[in-house]
Figure 1 (cartoon, each protein chain N blue to C red):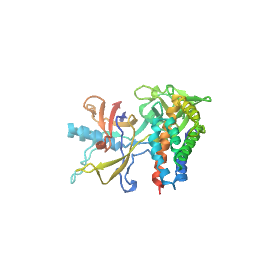
Figure 2: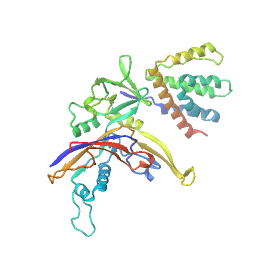
Figure 3: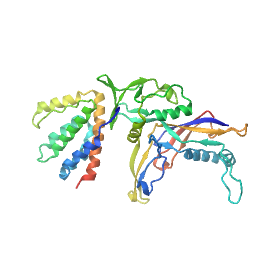
Figure 4: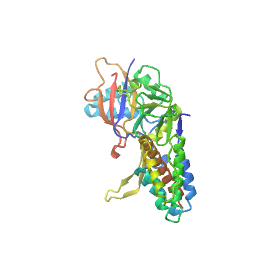
Length: 267
Length: 130
């Protein structure tokens, strides 16, 4: 029925995909989070919207064929089903500042399990508190400790993580417990207070102060794609050249966010 | 428990509450935050300069250092903490030597934590200052 494919997102700039700051969050621009791990996600609809608009510039008819036709007022049965379906993107590896390293990639079994299902990674999901074989830790009293700026953790065992990195290059990494990833994720997020300046002079506009959070640069995410094969001849070709493209996701391009590299596999 | 927090916020809040009534002293948190990136020795040594003034500023820096030493001790990093008077030149030298002799790896960790700790102090100062 459906052909299974998937996409990988590597953030090349901080990435913010979330609701705009409304009454409920004050002036805080929060990113969307996964319900259980409390880690950042990109909704399927956001990915879909960006893909659709990329294709729209080239050919509006083709866009309607792949992504479905919108309803037209007064016309019955004007909508068509989308032939390509997206699910949300979840984190595979999150870069976290670590004194002296300066980056350690962090994940948890739940996120890696999803990645395994989508990308078909072989081997068992690593246990919590397993470190990659190239991870630097401080040895003391027979324990390997990894320090962050808000806390520290002890590494119980070491394993080769090469297969768990989409490009096959092992980075210094650690897998933590599902219950700890939310907190470490919050510590790793890119957070800033920003202001909007007055149009006429270099001073802050009234009430134009906001806080924003974003996934850090270098975050690796994965999202599943389902392709419905109706017409055997047609191939879905979302990007001009091949299966990789640099796109902007999220709505904060104006403050320098959202630049991502997207790679498609299995299409 | 494999992930352990340093509980910086709790310790920072306690320090700020201890000094909240002394407005001149409370503002030292901002100076601590500025000094932190320059290294452990400068941060530690600042209390010697302040001890000439007859107020609690030096004590605040000392208490902050004490809290920092305790935090790092839980994480298994021993930070020197000798009791040194302003005029005791050899002791000052010994303390500086000890700080510079820390393994580079430990220095980096300690500075990252100290910087974060000062951020917490500043945060609480903004909330509690009279």
